[in-house]
Length: 448
Length: 190
Image (cartoon, rainbow over all chains, first blue to last red; front, side, top):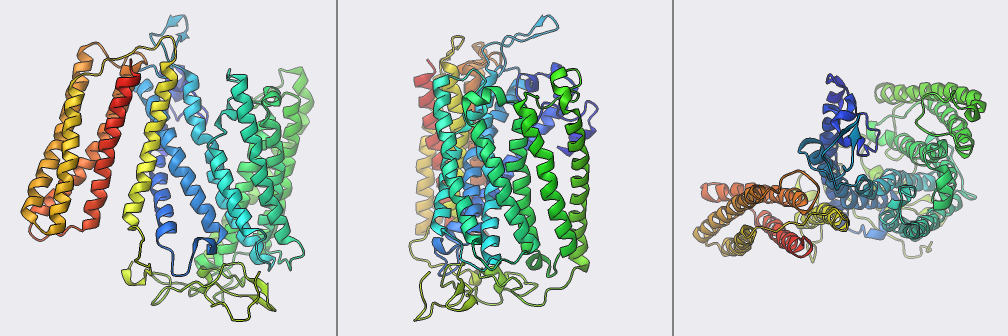
């Protein structure tokens, strides 16, 4: 993919969805020449590699758990990785099928996606193809993909909120059930990206129903995160702040999803800035927040040092406030009908009123970008110069990774790997702050 | 990674490699599910052009069916320690697998000779893509079988029964997948 930047006709320019017919026709522009082929081939390689990775996760989780680690004693992070891998293994191959057909259309003269094309008065010989077919194959992956990105963040947030509020996760089984439900529904909602492609309105209404159903497991997860925090003894570490930020963004972005999931409202809102705002808040910023939370939380395990808290707090607050300043106004722009992907909107009188808003968004974007550089600096600086970790388990967490040495050697544990006796969320139990998973259950121990 | 630190209870657990192969099979099924559902959607359009599946594909079906059988015999001989039968059966399996690919290629050239080219988007073009992709999966299987055969012929190489069984699973899968695809094209291609 990087090499396509250096070919003389430039990199792929079909947009991230690479919809045909434009992406299938070399005549459509410079970016549709060799750049698009390189892009498609690199995507195929990426798909194969993520499939192999997914297979490894699933097999390891189902077959190679340590003694005593039953499925319902697994940390939610691992559960989330498991569901992510299942989604990937079953949805990515379909994108591969779509990409193969596109490669055939581009290079071997087939017309799977092409029909009735006229370029500059010249009629192309392609017939019988359907550009919409590509969209079906693409979005069959495309929708599960947003959960592939979001589920690991959800898993890490669950873990981090429980550890840092010193309380058991609220509704462990509900968390599993909601992730499972999201996993199933993810495969049944792809056509909500295609409401305005001429999709049969009745079919559309079925997809509306299935789409809105996702609100149920999502709300269940939000409820559980809030109740985990409720009356907890919360430590506001950077990881906790990013985890709470994730919940906030997930609520904001999730609510606008209910607008877009309605096929009738979508006729007005599709391809406007409203979509940009929804998508970037819930899948972009929220999943980045999950990643930031995870990096701050597990950094001591990864490198035996802490990240700098002052930089982390600045990074969090500027990004949090900045994200809302950038994306909140975009919802109003979208409601007013302002389209996405336009470079210059000054030609339209109705969008001129948003000129100043756009300026504000641009300034905030630059500031927020600069703050991300602080995070990158903090990450690399702390690897070498960060404050050293002095105990094995600095957060007082129950999961197994905190029972290894500060700088674990090959195989993580000397000798036998530990046996697990309990779930990972025994916090503030029987007068004790936390009870690691490796500790056998006592005779008089109370039940959670 | 040393094995003694992995603390798996041996009872009733499937070997992780076999399990991984099952998941890989599920993943490959999704590729062909995607392509065959695209085919079904397209075949309902007015401009659809059907294709007559050449007879030679039935011959290749026979080749791959027999090869599944001989591979099973090879695995059985390996388990019983009858190594010369194992070598013979593996050789026959490799030859049948390679023969399958040759027959597929002959089927493609026959179709091409009947003016079914890459032009258009009917059943013929889907056939090239779907059978071709299946052929690539068979090719992967043949390469694996050749490696196992070379190991069997060499003096000091040892093969684990699990890797044989995993290869067997994959081979039976591409066999079954082929039968599904052929039946699919014969029934829905018209």
